[in-house]
Length: 185
Image (tube, rainbow, N blue to C red; front, side, top):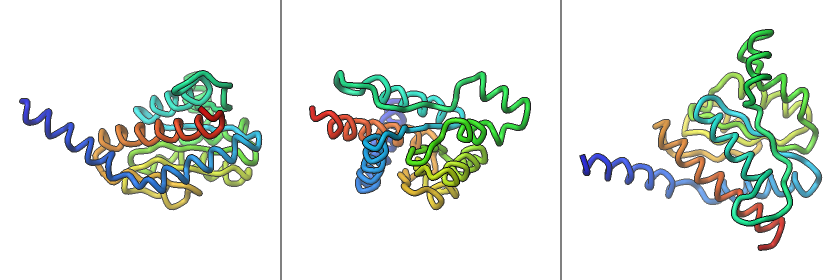
């Protein structure tokens, strides 16, 4: 049993250590540009990625490592709009409709999807581009989102747990960069 635990930890650490640091830097720069120009960061995802999207949005609007002013960020995974839109229209539109309501030119819309193919996230990213927002994706090594995004952080794995662990680490790293460079700590 100890060997299997050690192997799992090793796979996670290896995946995290193989993320391209240039992608993390590019993502932080895009977020910094948007926030400095009055934009907001809009996060979305399904399932575990939804929970991660909520977590990272809270790091920006709350705090990450130190007390500082709140940074504009929201997550589109709130249950009332998701279920209302899903019921009244279809699940594919749960994020697109919220993008239509909340997204402005210069915002950064961040889609998290382990497959990189989540239809509702793809449609929302397309709608964000139509509004003049920047798009960012956090995905595994497959899927269409990494190719359609203005900025992509690609986790070099096809294993859902490894992808989620790694993009949470990447997002935390980005939070730290943005926080330090915005508020000089």
